[in-house]
Length: 311
Image 1 (spheres, rainbow, N blue to C red):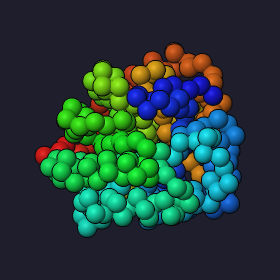
Image 2 (cartoon, rainbow, N blue to C red; image 1 turned 90 degrees about the vertical axis):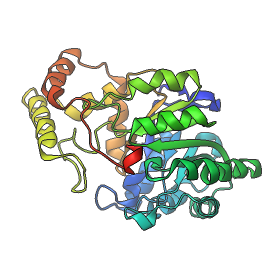
Image 3 (cartoon, one colour; image 1 turned 180 degrees about the horizontal axis):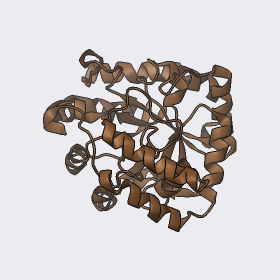
């Protein structure tokens, strides 16, 4: 496993991190024993960054992760979780200072930990800028003084809100998803800005939330039909050559050295071992060029998310 510096945190994180949303059933039914095995496998493989959130499985992912990490030395991993989003309807978003503090305590209890290495404000495009500045982030800064959290990060889908927030606040990391993968590389526009500020970059959804896998995306995926069709053609292109588009997608995602780590979401230990093998192999540049040609009609085309003024 290779490791890269995560901004100014001082951490060396594995280029592949574990995204724990599948532990909560975000992408289908999950077997708890297999989920526990997956976390143990991740640690054995040298993966040392695990990302979770109360939102994933309505706290189930955090609960399972707490069981999986019980008795494991804190020297073996960095744990990242989130505050602010707890569901999909408007009532499930709460970025108030009081709720942030309560959320951290609830996460610590579920995770059976005394501190959280990285606390992230979840999907900030659903919060007002003023609320984030006046309540959310100050509350997290106060929690840092208590030792309950060590570093503070932001997550979002729209890149402009990340640029705006990181320009005006002291943030340690950003987590961006579906913005550095075979279908969308717009995250590169933000990398220089983040590097100048020594903000660590976490890339998530290298498979575009399932679009770049043979299994396909979940029913809730926001991509329009024509977008999905182009991805399906890319999958077929690789299958005809007896190759796996998912392998190419993951190799591509981890190739940018300005991105500290790329999260792979899985609750399957065998799949995780396969992912690690994949990133240790050289990328097929010829196939990459062919696939990029197939995907060109949708490259950097995306979908909207969050409050209208934050998109």
